[in-house]
Image (cartoon, rainbow, N blue to C red; front, top):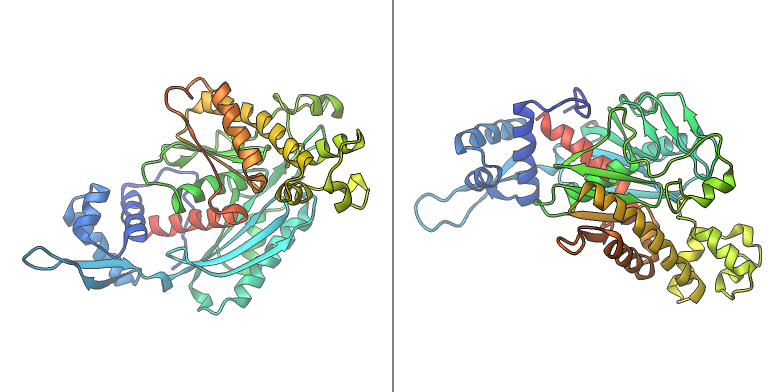
Length: 405
């Protein structure tokens, strides 16, 4: 089973929509009867039976035990054959890279995590390819059944995954990588590759793998630097794939001015300025265990130090997280006012700050959102944490596989 063509940039055909609808219902609800599939998909029973019989012939779906019946003939249940295919997903996070290999039911077969290089560069892409190759090598499966690899990476990706531009924060010049990430992965691994922006991958992963079927419009806030947008259950990428970049910048603006407007319209650091603010407060004489973590070298303060200090109930770290939550909450409120989503997921790593950050975001959104008093938006931490991007691109590849079944 190989993916013939990626469907990201064109509308699904009627057959592909039916494939996707039926197989998603089987994945989420199986073992399930054809009658119940018909009810959930709102497709007639003859259509469902024809499609399911085709999947059985291909080995994608198997028939299981008979369902309980109130009388008459007992309906036969069907479920996905998880070993019909496998998918690799590699995601880049604030502090790490995560690689997973899953079956078609999205059960994780193998998982690897590695620290990533701190900067965005072609070396990071090579690290991701090495991780994907390692996870394939270690997986004890029939490797001929690996149908694709999903790659979740920050930045603005062109329509074919050929090149990428990394927007930099605080007035730094954007970085462009002109080599094709898609082609590089496919040449090394010998399987179809699908490249997606990290926030886009995460928003679809949260929806497809975690959230209720009824949620159709949502936003995944990927730290303070970008967001994934789901409208009517489809990723909104914009005209050139650049939708979701959170913040404006100008090559003519000074770094100081860009930093000054970061909490308003500007670009933020990945940790929404928490490490920088902690450094500033400690320099003013405020006590904190963070100073001990870095042995007095305040230039070495990292986001992980903030998270560690919050777990120790450090007053300064908790105050820094609360202030960051208040400022990020204003940006979330702007997005809520603009897009009116049902759910906003907070992820990308900042959710590790826990209640001090999340409660502050919620209170800020409640204060600044015009719809909050009428229909409160649900604000939740990522269900998958640092695995969100890797699982998100896995979900995207699985949807492609299902659509072409």
